[in-house]
Image (cartoon, rainbow, N blue to C red; front, side, top):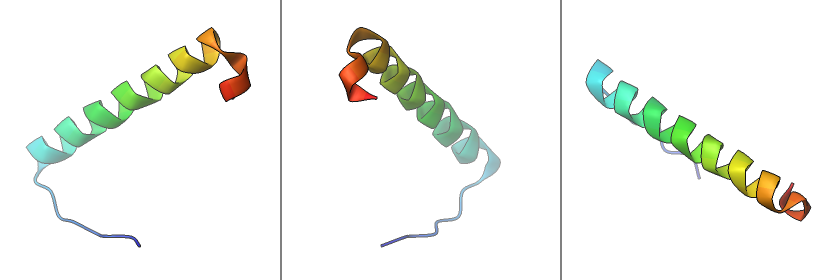
Length: 37
């Protein structure tokens, strides 16, 4: 299920920052354990 929500610019910026943080954590996990790739 996909839910489309409206965000103001501040909320969007915080969301984007959070997404990028998660992407960084995923990459770090892959570097630690390549079997996760």
